[in-house]
Length: 112
Length: 115
Image (cartoon, chains in turn orange, brown):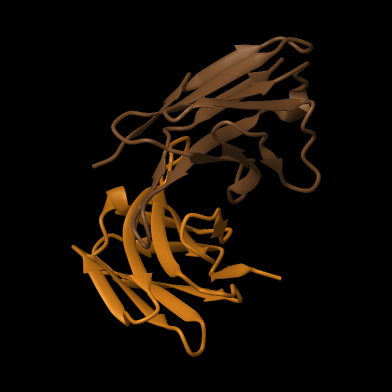
């Protein structure tokens, strides 16, 4: 069964600190893995997208890694800001153009 | 970049009435659109796949007679929640896939509250 598991479920950090979110998947065949940021009541916004051959991709203070062998990914947030408070969702695509498989997300709260 | 526009962004309706949600691809043609539902503090769950010119494909457990999907053109897909009940209150989002390994484009979402 295609699944995407994320950890931790929630996380609270102080402004300026770094954090790392984890994602494990069992989706096959694998096309790509995406990290999205979703603010409450809004649609997801893409942070990064990685294919099988990519190990790391950065987008500003966000850096995603992918290990296709172990089927694990991480999202590292550097120097967190209050505006980083949101749900971060790991999403895997089995084949291009098909529906995405969503993890349950990690809720990040950044406090001052 | 490509944009998917979803309307309305929020709606409140009475039990027993029907609500239509529109999802438009503004600058590209979408032969396929996906409809998701998200309950509070939960992940997006695929409800159905909308295909232009043909019947939608529904996920297991989703009532096709309750959630009517129409994809009559390459730029418009609609989801109609018929005879809405309070348990249908949720956040509904549409999405259109991009090209191979590119972005998936999401609508802004619709917050439905049935009273």
